[in-house]
Image (spheres, chains in turn cyan, green):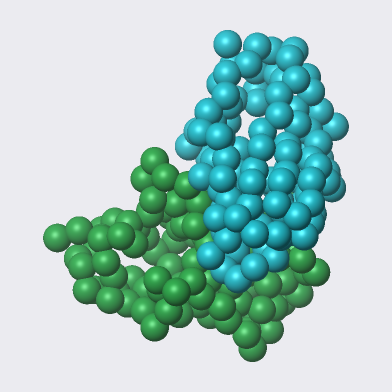
Length: 106
Length: 119
């Protein structure tokens, strides 16, 4: 299976820029997607195909990368962005998710 | 508005069965592939199974192959997950999710239903 590795946690102050990384154990082309999950809620789609912003998602969110290295950027971070962020690949079977990065606001 | 509402969860003994349902509304159900994704308590997300828009193709993760069956009733706009021979490691919140029509990412998710496998 394709393993997606994310940093477990980050802490930033409101107004700052934060980058969340996701590294794949093998190439996934650009079939990488990002989700936000707030405590007690279901995940929601933020970015699809590495860099495409889902409709209704604030332009503060952006994604980049291809192959094995991907990044989700939030700029500027707001208090409401407190959540766990997951990457997911759909290039290799089975589809896999990263372990999640928990974003905390200082 | 797209809505996905899961039901059928609960506490079940190891080795027993459970069937989850997901009622869809707000979109043309028969046009979309659908999936189940689960999340064990305090853990990350794990894809479980996918079914094509017409039910002709199904895909499973290895750990549930032969035990779980994904199906759909397009006339009722409902997705199902039949879970047999349940194990403690199947304990999780199960989410129903819609797949995009062209690329397999999950653009809408239900609120989830808890399944606990314990004696």
